[in-house]
Length: 216
Image (cartoon, rainbow, N blue to C red; front, side, top):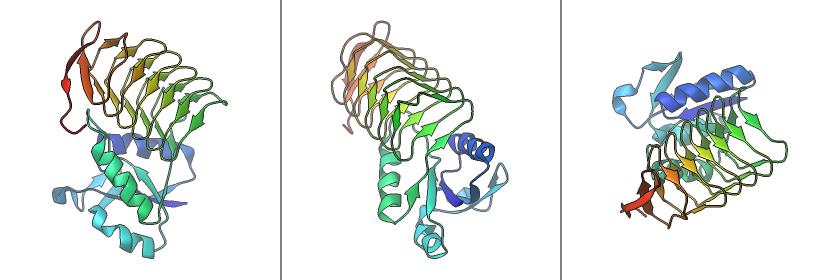
């Protein structure tokens, strides 16, 4: 299977290594919006140009794409690219590093990225274009909406619900049964013990509201 990657930064490196370990995907190139990266290489894979090349690549027979764009608190760019790729007639690949652990009863949506050491527990349900980053834990019966990013080392206890587009920062912990609203931002290292409204930003131990996100 031949595929193209969107993004040429650190997250793309992680996914390239995961795809190489699986052995059944040939990555023919990467696309990135930064014109300075054109012609450079990421782990030996050439950056061909921007996502404006997608229609031509589709004509050339490429049908599979993986989302190598991460998100630091704002997942709107990933969502925009995801929708553009799908409307362009491509299939979004899900990428799973061999060291990730996924319960057989978990359900993973299209384009899910499971980084090294990620754990997804029994009965968990993940939406489309979700990142479970390195060492993150999504426990049993959690429900994650589309375009959610659970950053490195974060822990969701059982039955946590996370709305679409939300970001749970590195090392954060969320108590069992808590609901996190759409487009909410949980700061790095926060301990969330209460529900978080849509678009809210919370930080601290225990986590307290800071303000609402302007893009919510």
